[in-house]
Image (cartoon, rainbow, N blue to C red; front, side, top):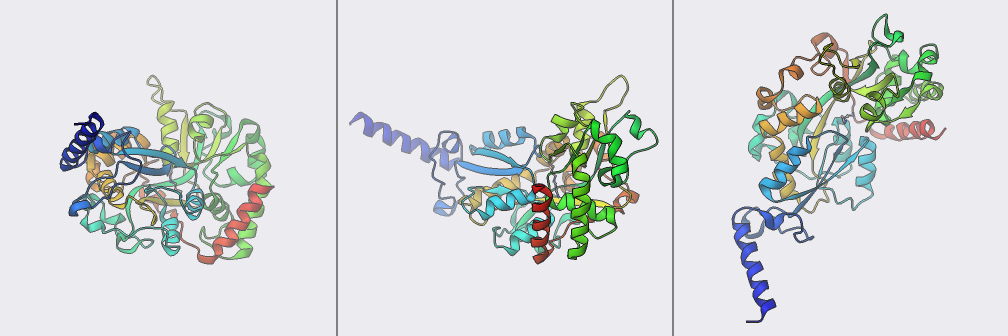
Length: 382
Ligand code: SPD
């Protein structure tokens, strides 16, 4: 037999044997670029690769490595800074992403735009592990498109020990928007989240308006408050702000997501004093509560593998590993027994009832999104 023909036959034989085992190295790095026919022969055959697009620092990468090793699927992983960045990528068409993590209001927006694939969540064995609180949410009735991932709150992170906070935590949005509060802090550095709905909603809370307003006059007032405060801010950063700005003491105050602030606390934790350098507070005027979700873009070419990965993320030990790494609460009830006690009892991560009462969801604002877009362009442009 010709040598090349023999090698080809051997390769086909090995590939068939591995496929019969439900994956394996045939789907690993170096495998064919083309997506596999995932349902060939009526049985699920995992694609060789899966492209996962998530928020920055929002997963334990060991969880990805474990999936690759267990199932022989190479994960191509990339991160984004905001829901709007994600939406822009998806709307551009051929993003190539198979699994994404939009927040509540953005799920509704994406469903409306036909950007998400449908799923049968109840058919996923691990969906039973999800807390009833997060099932069947108003932004995705019946979990027809997404499975719940993690949740959290948006507030203010501040440097412990700074004299500016000697009288108490900066628990008002005035610390981000009132020039008399900003003036003494600005030279020491202030960061805001580079996130359209989050920043505009903080200004809306400050002004006493709904974070979901569709009233143009209120939105213009929020824009003006932001533009007035902007010269006092050092950075717009919602990706690596806690590691590059907070932990390195480049700033003393940041608009922040709760888990990111908790990471800054633990990464600067001093065993001797029992203290971390960064603390988190929820402003008295009210703040955002969010829930992020695992979804599949409608144009994904590997939807069965994406569903398989979604189910994997809902394994209790996997969900707990993610929370233990990111410091964001899991929507997975069965994960609780594997989550560190320090996290479960931390009021900056799991808010007590009096704090929870101040939190509001961001919702899809319909066509008013064009007004939000216009305000954001003005905010970032000047
Ligand atoms: N470090 C990434 C944290 C992402 C949290 N989700 C943000 C939701 C915004 N509404």
